Image 1 (spheres, helix red, strand yellow):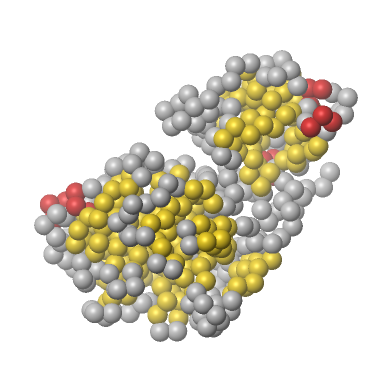
Image 2 (cartoon, rainbow, N blue to C red):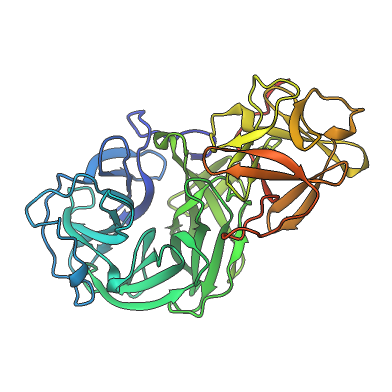
Amino acid sequence: MFDNTRQPLDSAGEVLHSHGGHILAHEGYYYLYGEDRRAGLKVSVYRSRDLREWEYRGTALSIDSPVVGHPLTRNDRRLRNPQEQPGKTWNLGVTIERPKVLYNARTGKFVMWMHFEDGNNYRCAHAAVASCDRPDGEFVYHGSFRPCGEMSRDCTLFQDDDGRAYFISASRDNADLHIYRLSADYLSIDVMIGSYFPQQYREAPALFKRNGVYFLISSECTGWEPNQGRYSWARSIGGPWAEQRPFGSPTTFDTQPAFVLEVPGTEGKRYLYVGDRWDPTEYFHSRYIVLPLEFPDDTQLRMEWRDQVSLDAATGRIASEPGAEPLLFRVASRNTMDYLRLPPDARPGDSVGSKRLDYQDEGMLFRLETAEGGKSRVVGAAGGLALAARGDRVVAARQDEEDPAQLWTVEDRAEGLKVLRACDGRLMTAEGGGHSCCEMVLREEERWFDTEWGHSPQGFLLAAAYGREPARR
């Protein structure tokens, strides 16, 4: 059973340290590869027979792994990182993200592709390759490069029914997604298939195939904060790809796509979405959320929240528990991606601001309480104080049903975005921001899509706090 309300543990009772990863099924085992952020650069590997009990198998790749140069294609050779020399360790400042592994039946090799940065300024934007004779052995590092001369950051792998393999990555500073076909040994690029979704700034891609239809899911570029996931579909991996559609909640249930796991069984193939719930305050606390994907027809997918998901690995049958209706919400400014916060020690009259997302911060949890005339009160779950419009500021106030300043109208403005209008008609606006903080003020004019990213200072996401118990007054 996958319990989405708890941090997953391995068979030794330790937290799974495997982020941005991938699962490979091979000879009766599932192998989980991912980023291990505890100490330096590591890619960890776990294995399981039933997708429930995970055994830690060690480090698949580290800066101490052997380095053997691989002859890259004519498109890639000139961009080889000169710091990577055969027989020597890597540059100690490197960063490895999103390791994915495929098995090549022709060569008997397990091949890992990943995103490589040299640790200086995140401008390297390379892909990197490693290989091994065993799924849980120490991989040999072959070097990093820009595929066909193009930038490459968040990435994934896909193996088609005919055994051909593909590398998909975010390119041109994440503006586009590129799809490449790999060489027969999976160790280099054969050809670039195409560039897709131009200027849409997508990352965290995951590609899978169902009933002859290719699905590509991805997220927006909002750093470690969650956002609305989207998917597209195509009859051919080279496209044309359909217009992207949203799936899941406005924050994809507080996750970013890692991969989609195909689970074959005697009752047919099932598909599980596996997403990283990144914790921006402490990456060690990041964990996976596993949710079943449903398909109303061959070109649509749907995903709903489930507290628990049970999988019969033999039949492929999935059972799930929907969980209680979420009663608590976080309120995120779409412009700054800071989260509204009423700290537990807030006092009436204190100005309301926001800060970086922190899943442990009870001051970010709110209730929407229905009031008269279709209006609502926004009440902090931890301290019981309400948001009130006082002058030009949004402040904390003791709940008072006779106080019109505590009444807000919650209005839809765009896909998943809302505005909060005070009783006098002015709109709550987030000013300032970045990861320092921003202040909630009131403005009469409606400002919409006025920044370089197309975000509104008056647009807010009301994100359900899944898996949380309501705080007591």
